Image (cartoon, rainbow, N blue to C red; front, side, top):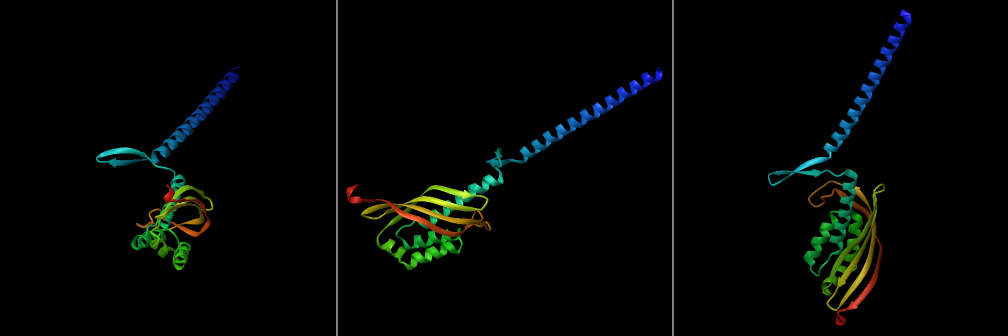
Length: 204
């Protein structure tokens, strides 16, 4: 009888120890998971100084930030390349800015337009070119993009509206003052450039 009682107490003590150890393990795992999550969230937080006051800011995920930079880079390039005025110095300046954001595929299109006398005709016709970005589609896995825009070509006697579609591939590059996103547009080409509307200023 004494032996059976001793066995029961030993068994109960063993179960108690095992249960306690299992409970401690669960608690430790829970604390570790919570601490890891808290640390991860804290690492995403940064403080910026506004004057002398520290302000809490949230650090965006790298992938989200990269897509934003890609869109801005593409839009910036098209603004430089397609926003033109009948001023030789301005045309030279804005095209030079565009060339920092693109490889030789952009230079080839620029040279082709020059050979056709496009920029000279623009100046003699006193034409102003404006570009509006409608949308930009990007495949972040392949780093390919398609740009959709609307061109407005304003001459002294008329206004012409055209649709513009271009495509290309983005590659990483070194960040510089002239290329703040550290990206380079390659294999750039014009997919479509069609007239949408022509209006005579005489009728406006």
